[in-house]
Length: 334
Image (cartoon, rainbow, N blue to C red; front, side):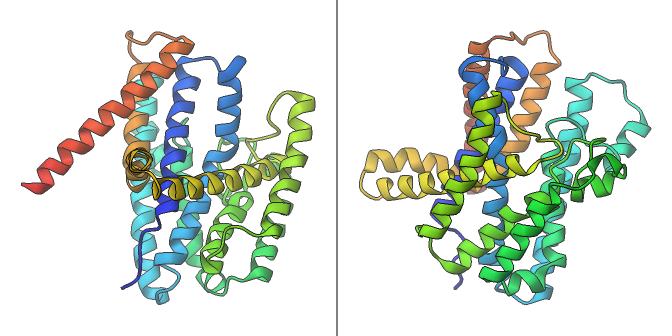
């Protein structure tokens, strides 16, 4: 029977979910312009979407690309639809709760037809697009090797130099980036998906070439960040932003492997790591529901913008979602 779960990948997804929820709380209720929260938000913004795409690629190789095209396409298509519906729910909730705009069919249509990408929800549309492109590129991903990965890397990095100001179509913006829309374009971030596929195929994590590439990419990004004090272009992404993501994903990968090994040696550590792993196994639930809770708080009079409130609400969200998951598990047992 094919193994469909890899513990370090679930741990990595759990870490990424925790980071994204914290970042959203900082952005809505804290202060991402200075101090510790600025550095936290910058690091999370740099690495989280890229990290998720790495995990996507790894999982797709594990459970999809080892199947026939027909079976893989059906399963990946269903998953893409799940992501798309999550985008619809989150996007409409952002318009209704956070922006507090009045209801109109036109606003709903714009979201449903992907003519508009509401704030803090666009990453879900990109997840769906990545899976759709992953189906189209099935023959290429099936033959993934060092040369294919290098080619995809070059294409992704070259894509960072596209004339973004000339791209005005919302669908092209989702695939290749644009200055008219806030998106995570598939073309530029495709290197992370391909890296996940390649790492899974190689079944290795510790090698000199990967370390050298991560150090080189991180150095290029680091020089810019230290000299400017801010992130390089993110919407749409520039090459230095993608380079920073490469180093960040490598760090997440090493951290998840380290936690896995530590959990195998200590029961206490294993409990904590298992909790993170469980979040990773239910990442879409946590991402979608946390967005709804954040948008609802943002649109209410109950919010209290402050750095401490950002941390507190992050913990409150995690407690609420942990409680909800417990109720769902109890219902399944009955």
